[in-house]
Amino acid sequence: MSDVPFKNPGWAGNTGEYDLTEDQVRGDEFVGTRPIEGGHPSGSASYPYMLPDKDPEAPLFEGPYKDRFEKILTRYPNKQAALLPTLGLAQEVRGHVSPHTMDGVAELLGLSPAYVRGVATFYTMYNKRPVGRFLIQVCTNISCNLCGADDVMGAFLRYTDTELGETSEDGYFTVVEAECLAACGFPTCVQINSRYYENVTPADVPKIVEHLKAEGAGGD
Ligand code: FES
Image 1 (spheres, rainbow, N blue to C red):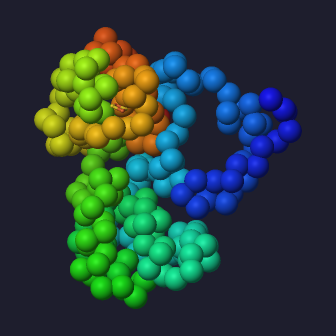
Image 2 (tube, rainbow, N blue to C red):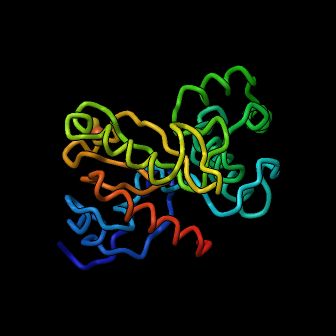
């Protein structure tokens, strides 16, 4: 592989340039391993699930978010086609996509509220209600399930002191089941916000949770 800087064509339509070499992008650093801080960001990383500050009442969109919204519009032939990334941006600002937010997006894009709700409720990556700072999605689909995903799920619920789908009292953790995360070769796969954790066993869970708590306490 070459050391020539790799111009990432972007995912989710992001046309940003990244200061990464091809080796870093395509390398095997994270394949088959599970660093405690998580693996590579998933495709959803263009729109991180959670940031420290989420405001469900924040405007759609102002400042840098307005710039990003306008940039999104330039990438599609019409406003309707820009619906998915616009919902993603709204979630980034507000933390979840409530019916109120869906209506706001509908107005921005000149679509009917019913259409936007139909799309937003179809996709699980849009949180329809508030989630904790760390959204822990444990894959319980077939491959992971055969390799002990239920025990991994149980461990996450125990160590975060939550019920499935509920948010912990400190606001840090929401644990949910996920369908196949497309990392079937590395079961159990867990997506935490935008990062993948692969080959997770119940024994790994306390360390991961402690790491997340420390990260949350650091405010980054
Ligand atoms: S079954 Fe878990 S990632 Fe595919």
